Amino acid sequence: MERTYIMIKPDGVQRGLIHKVIERFEQRGFYLKAMKMQMVTKEHAEKHYADLSSKPFFAGLVTYMCSGPVVCMVWEGKDVVKTGRKIIGATNPLASEPGSLRGDFCIEVGRNVIHGSDAVESAQHEIGLWFPEGVCE
Ligand code: ATP
Ligand code: MG
Image (cartoon, rainbow, N blue to C red; front, top):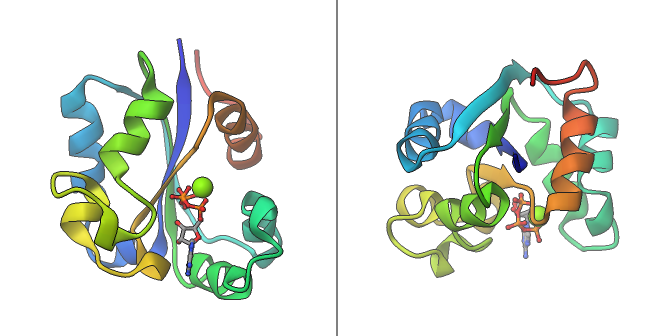
């Protein structure tokens, strides 16, 4: 079954939105397969967003991701990568549909509450990166 990597970013944790994220994914019918809270090192954040390293906002993005604990999750279910991205909403919250997590809970692209893998291949890569200890079947 398809899996995706979902991460509540430091602002989402700090603002008490963990339960909102879990609720939206659970009520849609997806299964939570793994979850943990941790601080992120600069090196790990740079690895996670390596494809954006040439962007002007990269340094700020890494600082943001290291500014407080994140909640790392693996969710499973039919078409969960694409549907998960819909639940999350567009990258810039000002373009996110109301009803999506970003569309309901934020206004800044640099403080957009949550990450979701953008493809099945990147989901597999990110799950390996964030859960090197493995995830239960
Ligand atoms: P994520 O990978 O976090 O789920 P995304 O796939 O919607 O987000 P990406 O293009 O992968 O969007 O960008 C990664 C993150 O970088 C965004 O979620 C956002 O926090 C930050 N970001 C993207 N564009 C900008 C920008 N123009 N200014 C500041 N931060 C940005
Ligand atoms: Mg992305």
